[in-house]
Length: 524
Image (cartoon, rainbow, N blue to C red; front, side, top):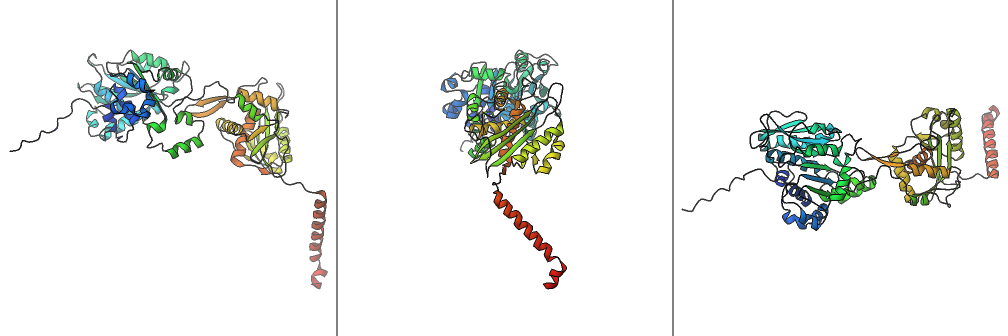
């Protein structure tokens, strides 16, 4: 009789992180890219093997020398910095579950429970990783057997191979890292770590990191994930100093979104994102750190392009006129900007700033009447204006045929201004009375990336107490020109033609009056 084939041996021990991530019985990512798989191997300190020569893997780890230097044991810290929708949270979630099965808890005393902590800027954002953990554990017939008790809104408890429970918990970030010191740590995940800054941050990464490192159990790990943000802070400094220089204690990985996840980030989606979000593409797609808070929004070359001696100061027939009004009467100035576009290039032909005195506010009706008259004289049929004092302004603009439109947030309108300046399609004649004041104010504008990666700006107080109001109204006008276009300037009317048209109209009126007389009707 032929010998029976032996059944394959059952695998012993926990799966690798790569297996857990890609298995349909785990976290269900069978399409994991070479970079995502290499990240899994690096987190566990496994050789990269066949992935070590992949160009995208080499780029993500900082070059061939960095790949050669990767530790062959689990590093204490891993920083995974990548573009958005790159499966960072999914990898971190799988790592958290695996940690509950591999961490050494032999030194725990009776009644002590280890914890894997998930920390983010808020409980809500931390629950992104927690959602991956809970959803995949409950959906997997294998992982579900590890559950101890019923999960709660922020905690799930899994059974360690020793039989002891280990909890995975979403914890609130605190400035001193106080929420991380109460338990022995089976691991910690800092989600959105690049946005965790210094002393005044909602989550002080440096303090929280220091608090947890001394409490990591053998085999436990600190995993910091996120997309780049501002070019400052402890995570930024570590990434810039240590990317490409791995050690036994720290590995840094940085990869663009389309390299990490080309299934989602097709060439078409990347192009669309760059077109719609040119400022954010640097951080969200390219995984490059962004603007530094405090740097200038405009650079020297911008001023050379914007303040052009060739800029016109008057409009001509057929020009498209667009404008913006920013009203303030007590502390802020009331400002007006009018743009005249010809052949695709817009020139600022009117810049006005009415400034209140320390002891005397501006009179709203006087300001609105003056601005409405200026818009009418320039043949302007539309103006961008925010909601402040809108009804007061409308009382004066409606009678002269000027429609008011809402504008966007400051980041969007200043970005529109900068894009038009750098494209050479918006100019200001330096001889305009307010040109030098405008130049100074534009130099004071500072970029700011708000939470969520939203571009905003800071408008510092000017020397007289206003808040860069002239710069702001020009940005509103630039955005309005881009969004709504403008009103064509009518061709001039020849006085003789106007007289003839008037005579003809009067004769036609008289003829119509005659037709209505009884004697005319009898004869006809």
